Figure 1 (tube, rainbow, N blue to C red):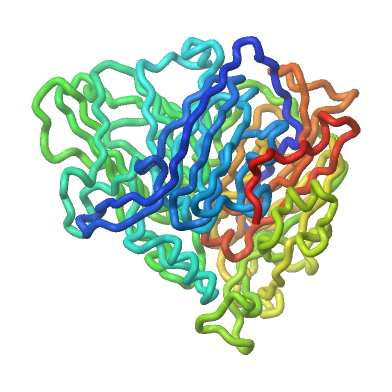
Figure 2 (cartoon, helix red, strand yellow; figure 1 turned 45 degrees about the vertical axis):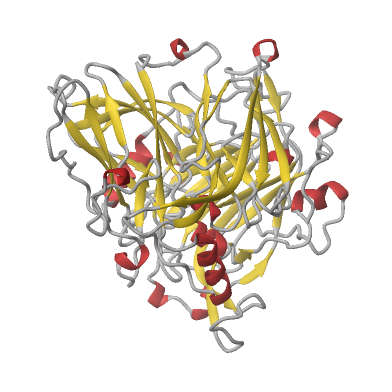
Length: 599
């Protein structure tokens, strides 16, 4: 059996550096409301957007700044905003996932998010964390180094360009989510992929010029692309014809320069890459080249790939100024949709720019299966469902996560009244040990059944947790981009097969593993991916803080860990870490802000 595996190291305590003297307050107002827009040469439709933009506004701050965003909900839907990748040191009430850290902001309401960006620099992003509304409610969050561009640990680019990849549906995405909820059947895939909000000219014979985003570049200049995958459900291959990339950062963490002609990026992830033109391209006056994305289809089951993904190209145009444009632009040669070898090579080969201090002491060990299965119809399944039929569900350790509906989990924790909101019994191991890589047809039907619950794993302040994430084939196997709110983690190894706790640890990279906030596994035709997450705190008297920073901080609160495919999250692929209060007021959960939305 082919084997490989992935080990992640997730710090629940991160070192921060004080830069108060130079810090500023960066303030924005987000008006969330209706936007009338036409895509794919269809008649105009109404979407939910921020400040009438798709994508929404880019937030730009400098390391150490405080970011203040006044969110005014003028849309017809409940709304929250999550600041994806922000550590939220001392500001857990600003994290944003609906019913986890806050009740959503109702139509006509408002809420001010306030957080600092100390100890972070690079490309992050923000998005709605309610229903499927992040399909159109998203934008970039750029944190510049305190010393300016000259502080980059790579050649200073002449310009920086934000490239946000997304998905587009011809239907109202809130209605799609409600239909999936009420039927227990996953929503249909997107109709198109977008680059900076536009799908390009390869859909439905639609070649209108306003359907394609254009990047106008200058000859002999160095450009850094800040690439963000804001898609709801689709990992993407990303290329530019006659160009390659020098990857220098991922998820706002610097990497050793990694040369590649293709970027593989899953929902939730970001990649910073210097654009490298082939010989003669930069000097080609008026040269035009397609930037393109296609889905990476990681699913291995009997379902045709076209059922899961739109097997199409989203495109933009890269055009060098200075002369008459050639026509048509050149398309890049894209990988096959199921090119796992290319995906695995990209996702597993990056390493940190400098050695990491990887804590080795572990207080709690966890082994967690990630599964697609089924469950009983619930009271919310009011369409095409009855007591004699099961519905699709996803789970971790056979617990299919469901959000509370009366009180947010963080508020329940703060008040010390969790009854009816969540339970502290998320299991450290799956209820049954079996061959996780066996074909679905070989599995007992009872293994596929899961139960709905809101279970959390409670951690003591300053504890260290090691978690192995084991993918399964109960119904199908597929890449799962797992995102942890509030923290980064080290990716110590990646591979396939059943995790072997005796032999696999010898393969861990404990020197310079890449650091991430969202990790994407890959799968092949025979085996299932397993990941190893090492959740740790380095805030110990006998273990000094990471050299880069001066102060270690470990925050109490509830921190969501979930698949960043919204289709999977909707059906339960998530769990929550509850971190207990520390010994001092500074290490304990702060009181909620006065304008915290109420349910």
